[in-house]
Length: 259
Image (cartoon, rainbow, N blue to C red; front, side, top):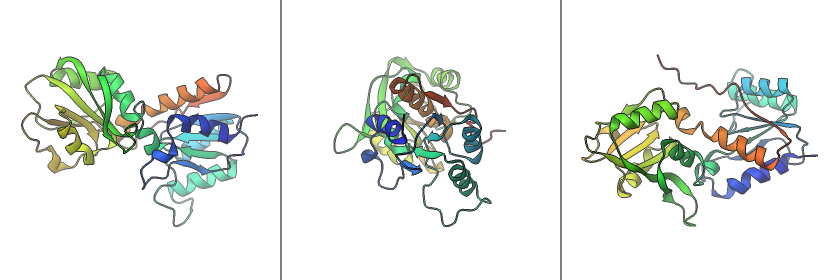
């Protein structure tokens, strides 16, 4: 008999809750560690539709990247999407767990998997914590310099990026690349200090695109920069529980619609 605590222990061996950012709310948000689990549904955001999918499929644990309960709920109402998801999960007896910055801050996590898709080598943490092992963002190098056009092609072909907001492209070869999945505007300075030619992240504000000579920015979208975590979580749980029912949601929908 597998319990919630068995699944979460495997996740936390990979992404310890102790390393999450102080403002975050990663961990078990709904349910008890002692609840029995018959199946796990992996998602990105815990929406009402995701909870419905879990309930219909008999999955009694949802694991997502973004926390369902984040800044705090002043009221739980079916008129609010988060409130509706909470109500649906509780009524269906579904536990909800989020990894968020805990999985952002491990080298093999959100930013690291994106670096792997780009083919970067010698990847390391961009802004390490005091322990030197965890931190936000990563930085690595292409084996050979790439042009802006080549990187744009990689992002769209291999990384599922639909839209790129970019500063003025560099005309020289781009070799050292820093990446931070999610809202990474605060790490622009760290990327420059680390010697990055290019910094890839999301939610970059307008004025940051006035970049200095020899440095450029790309904003690829929040969803696009972090969605790879679902693959990591699926592989992790399946490796630890090979005969267990684990599935990635069919409702991994980006709330941002491009026209």
